[in-house]
Length: 374
Ligand SMILES: *Cc1c(COP(=O)(O)O)cnc(C)c1O
Image 1 (tube, rainbow, N blue to C red):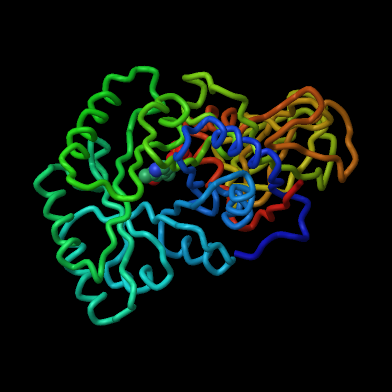
Image 2 (cartoon, protein in one colour; image 1 turned 60 degrees about the vertical axis):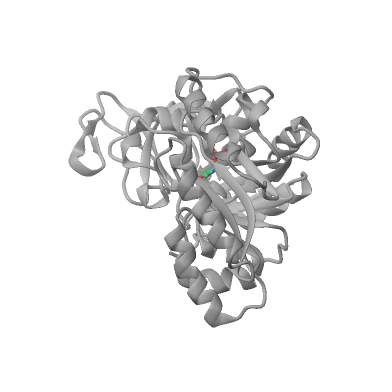
């Protein structure tokens, strides 16, 4: 999709906010504990390369991504720090990962056996860096028993020219929940599995943002810091953040058209909204093709510091809002962020849509240009 640079609708990313959030976390970590910034999904919609640079400036010593292409994007941008792919990559790509010094998450020994064949053929001259994923209750990927884990470690040990056992980790499914019953169960599973190791690898890690914010005691020597770095509370509103998180993303546009409706006039597809009295209506050039969801009919934007309801259906590329009075074409519209005393957060949008802010942030499409402040 082309980037809409000739349209007055944009995501604005405050790099200072990113740096301050990440720095605050780095300062809280125990000595010897590193922070890898999670920049998967284009940095949660904020722009992976820009976020990686801000994170590096703030003290991050590496990065996590979800897929190999995201790791290669960082390498192409000149980042030489460690990069861990959190998802499962094809064994056929093991030589490419080895060459680029990109660390793979490995969830089963049969993966190692397949990758070993590709590594033997490719003769990269350096081993693939491996973090073993442990499934302690997330139920997604990873080794689940000491026996299967030991088999994986043994296989790497007997093929040490192909594999470097660099890390071991797990992922909690309820670290953002005020009820820590399940968290404790997962932690006990983790301790049992890791306790069975005869030798600890370089990186031992369990913490996403929520775990590091609220269960820092189990961080070990690496934190995979994601959503909180972007200034978003991982729990939504369920648990207070231990320090102020500053949202880095805002979304702004302009009125491209303004008109007065008469009683009985309708707006947008399906004519689901009909004016009861004379009223001013503005048109904003953003729609569901930008990731501004169709479900946001009835929600609001900010114009001149005031909340203005989105009336009628959100279209693919445009939406209409009810204005308190006539405003000129070119008047600023804030869809996410602050205008005067009023603020709309990604959390507000997520609440209205019945989802989480993660989904809203990474749902903004590539048609929206990203501009960077500070
Ligand atoms: C996405 C992800 C993270 C980061 O999670 P946040 O909640 O954004 O901090 C950490 N670890 C794994 C395995 C992930 O998939």
